[in-house]
Image (cartoon, rainbow, N blue to C red; front, side):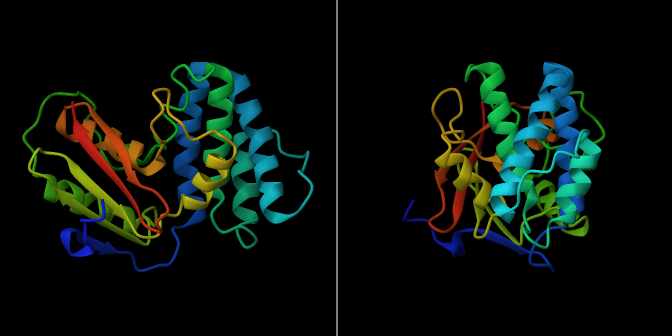
Length: 233
């Protein structure tokens, strides 16, 4: 990937340093509730437990025992954002840990990036094939994400001749969580490829607006930029 330059990408920059913690946590909770439908209440029970453990490690406090519901967890994480400004990383790590346990790495963590963002932007989920202008799709998505304070500080994309998209994150707000998950051996997808929460979310969004199935590969991680490639299949 050394041949790729920043000048290859169309770049967007948000009018803030970090996304709004409450907005991002709220979007994640939407996805968590969907996972609860699949796994049952044990999913949320374990997720709350592990999220509190991850958070305690980050802020240097003993895990609280007062949190029993997802709504309480969300409020607690937001309330501690002055000590750890990216609580979304805590939820991501907890999701990965629970899904790895419940699925035994068979299909594990395949939906952790599906955090409810696409529900904000797309109403139709018919899956019909559509002719869309990807430049307009990406531009509108990013601008909406910035308006809602859900998007990263900086984001870039590049269209390739084969129809794939390269996504550039100079400073991803999930990076600290990815580092932690990598250390804890939680970041591998079932086929061994690396998990990317934002790449997964964008693939779900692209599926909804184009009607095609999309997947992604991580091309660079923490160098310090991250680059993912999304492609139809």
